[in-house]
Structures are given as structure tokens and as C-alpha cells.
Length: 177
Image (cartoon, rainbow, N blue to C red):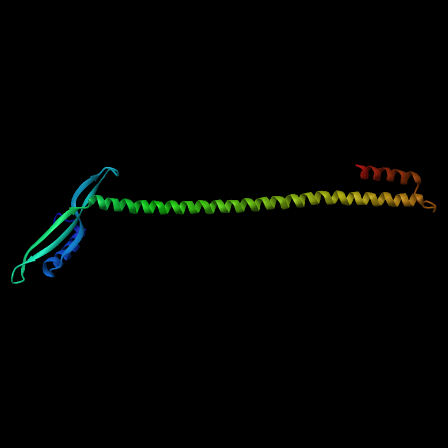
């Protein structure tokens, strides 16, 4: 039993019980303490074997012998381990791609929100710039109209003609420019 990995010894003992006492054929995998060098990972790995065993009985039904064969399955176990590692890496890559897509979608949404905010700002700014000028122009137009009407009226002017002329000139400058 010293050649079997300590962690696998209880399992191996159980398999022997099924084989020798219960007289059942058994096929099982265990690790040995012997190691082998795995070049791709530059590391030492435990040897795995597949044991296939059966028994032979005496005429009276007692156990005559146990026969079996073992096969080194270390490379198969390494391939399984590599496949599991590749699957983990693939899953991690898929999660990374999903996270990248989510970041890209969030960035696009944020960019769209920023664009909308900029448009809204430009609309408000443009509106505010136009409206005060519009109000000034409307006021100037109103002043000019009322002064022209006052000047043209037959009533005796309370305000001097010179003052009216001067205000009309100022208003006309505002409305023309």
C-alpha cells in the first residue's frame, strides 16, 4: 500500500474489500506515489493508474486468487485536467467579453446621455441668447413706433422735438444693428 497515495488508500482498501470479500469485479483509478515529469507545465505530476481486477475461486467457493491488470492513465488524467483548465479559461474569457460588452453598452448610453445634455444645453443657451435680443428689439421697435406716433400727432408736444429726434435716432440704431 505504500505505493498508493495516502489520500487514495481508504478508497483502495474499499475496492479490495469488494474484490476479495464480496467477490465483485472492480475497475478503479488511483494515484501512486511515483511521479512523472510533465514538460508543458515544467512540473512533476503523480502517476495515475486504472486497475481492472477479478477473482478466481476454488472448487469449494473460497477465494483462490485475485487477478488484474493496471494501465498508466497519467497522460489521460493530465488531458482531463488540461481540458478543465481550458474550460475555466474559456468561461473566464466569456465573462470578460460579456463585461467588456456591458461596459461598451454603458459607455454608449453615457455618450448618448452626454450628447442629449449638450444638445439641451445648446438649445437653452441659444434660446436665452435669442430671447433677450428679441425682447430688446421688440422694446426698441415699440419705442420707435410710439415716438413716431407722438411726433405725428396734432397735439401740442410736451416733450421737445429735439429730445424726440434724439431718442428716435438711438432706437433706430438699435433696431438696424
